[in-house]
Length: 373
Image (cartoon, rainbow, N blue to C red; front, top):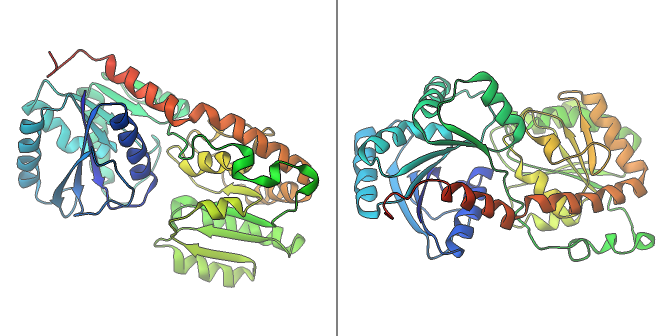
C-alpha cells in the first residue's frame, strides 16, 4: 500500500510528531510505501525517519496562509504519487484533505485525531470545530487514541464516518525490567534515587502549576527528594516565578533534551499533572522504563494505561492535595513503589509497537483497493 501521512510540521518535537515517526517508520519497514506531507517547516525533522520514507515540505507559513498554493502543491504530489491513503495527523488538517478527496476520489481519507474531544484551543478553535464536523460527515474513518475518547465522539456527534480507536505505541519496545533499571533486579540492592520525574512541554495544558503547588507539601515532608521537569515552552518564566512564590527549593527544570532515557533511569516514579491529554506518550514511556505513575485521571485515556493501585495511582483531575498524598505514599512505601514499577512493565506490553502496527494494517486492509485495482 502507498500511505501518505499529512502532518502540521515535522520539525516539531511534540508527541504527535513522535508517534507519527514511529508508525511511519514501522509501516515502511513492513514494506509499505510511506510518504509524509509536512504543511509547514523546511526541515530537518526532529525525529529520525527511515531513508525509504518520502518527505515533502509544503512550505506554508501557517495552517491558513497560502491556501491556494498549498492545495496546488499537494495536488501535484498526490497526482504523481497516487497514494491509496491520505491520513491527517491532527483532525484540523481535514481543512485541506476534504478538498483533496474531491480531487482524488480513489484515495481513502482517514483523519487521525491526537487531541481528545473536549480539548480547548486558543488558536483556530472555530476552524477546528468546523473541520471536526466536516470530518464526521465526509472522511471515511476517524481514528482516536482511547476508548474513552471514542465514547465521547460517539455520544456527542452524529458520525457518518467509521470511528475506531488505535492507541499510541510505547517508544521503547523490547526492553526488559533488568535492562532498563538494574535496581529492579534485586530488591535488597535497591537504593531510592529520591527523584520524581515529569516530562512534557511547559504549557498550560500540562498542569505544572498544579504540580508545583502539590510538590510544596511533598517537599516539606521529604526535603531530600527532588522534582525534575523535562521540557520547554511558553510557561517557563511563569513556572519559575511560581517556584519562587511557593518557596520550594528542590525543583529542577531540565529543559528540552534529546536523551530522556537517563532521566527515566534516574527516577523513582513518574507524575502526570495534565489538565487533558490525547493519549500521553510519556505515560507509556515511563511505564516501559519500569516506573510507577501518579496521575490526574484527566480526559482522556489515562485510566487505560494506569490501573489505580496496580501500576500507579489515579487522582481526581485538579485535586492538588490528593496528588501530594499519592506522591507521599510512593516515597514512603518503597516496596509498593517497586512492585508497581514491575507491573508497569507488564501492562505496557499491550501498547507495543508491533501490536499497534498490526492494528493499523488491519484498518488499512479493511478498505477496498483503490489505485491498486
